[in-house]
Length: 446
Image (cartoon, rainbow, N blue to C red; front, side, top):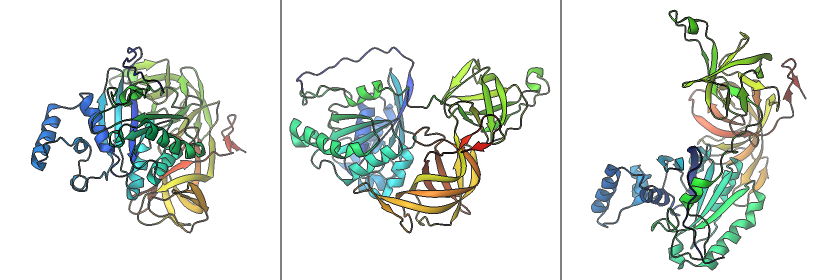
């Protein structure tokens, strides 16, 4: 490694976008401290937040600000010194806006980690430089891979406690790279740091002249996320049929639009589309947003579509393009993270919520459970218990229109809801279907 440090940041030359990222790692690896230091050093805190931190330091008697208190808001979290619930924080720089999910490190709260990471563009896995790669490091990296998080930062924290040893940093990188090929993560960045002291978080550290990469904030500001969303194959789950019914406004009197968030692809005025499950085809007449009409829109914009023909479409239906067709079917194959105290068993019925559509479903098979210590599947378990991750088969009361999660995270994800209590019991990722929609008639073909 070279002995120079690059302090320069490229000028802002693109519109400000939003990066969603989460932090994960084992207990006491410094996740909450890292976020607190990132907010503090980037001057993203309000005066009252800083004053509250200072008061907390005076109360504890140590006189030192505990930056972890910015995210560990529950009393139990502060008493035990661990993160229990997912905490969200927001900040911005001239280059980008950020949404942070501080997720728990304890194995008991794996479900919380899955919840916080489900919408992330990037995941930060913290590793204690003294301990190296441990089971929780592999567990959280495996979850990031299952959730198809495109970018990963391995933050080797507490480097000050190993005398900023370059040899130790390289050793940890080698440990991590031993199991990384078994996972589906393409973009991985290793950064040595000290979250407590702020080294290599916002500004480069004088203690790591052997490290020539970016700081954590520098990487977060510049990592390319423009291609993270699927822009091939238009997908538009309908959330609401927009009928203003304003008798005094002739322009709105006969208005009928379909509102929702684009879940994949690009839509343009004049484009031919199909409404599923009915199979009716039409042409996009107008695309509306709060700021007015657009000639085209793309994922993940929220829009209202007006079609040329008055066809029967309601909430839960999906409007698609006629290329890059989705799968469909009643028999689904999926990976799930089980999130409830009562175990998952074969034959039990649930509600399955997929995009804006909710159907009844039954778990017919449990194919395997992943051993998180070895990342090896254990075939045909009797049940899945709290925080287990496994592969199951589901049969729904009516066909779903979906993509494989690896192709489209928005149309390939779902949750299972317990009937009677309405408790969310599982988060799922659909595997690809061999059945495709037939564009000529809307029928289904293998």
